[in-house]
Image (cartoon, rainbow, N blue to C red):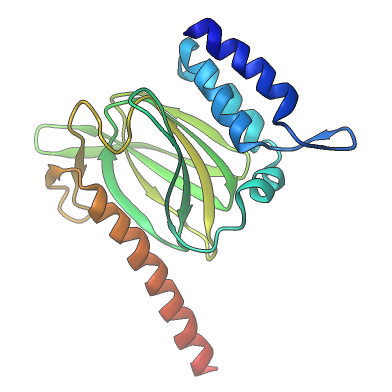
Length: 213
């Protein structure tokens, strides 16, 4: 199986990447195949693939399209690997949560601020932060807990690669309330609604400001 993936990847590289002159364009299909091949060597290898992809953000935007609506858009899903195109609404935040699998985050537009947390005797506490702009990449290991903020007034686009099935993980995931830090089961439908609500709030706020001028 591993040999087959390598062969398919090499063939796809020759046929699926589009070029303009000598410039190689980002290909969604090729990116998926490259991640599948790299997964055999772990998250560091996937980080290299993601870093290469977002090193020229305009090519990713050209291939995936402009971010029109906030949401979670799967590009690939299997029991071993999930690739998602995240679009964060302006100023939206997502509560602390874990993944129970490694993840590689690459930003191709906007900014994503991550706060990292760890468990303590009561619940969790913040232990660090990392702000990623376009072209930025970070690895989160299987034990990581983080919350996410888009601190700017426009959509942020990010590619996240997970070492498992993001939507149906083997180990149950957990999340923590933003205000109280009370722990509860992760609910992907609740998360999807957070993306929708954040976009609606921003649009309403923008219209209100326009009317007041």
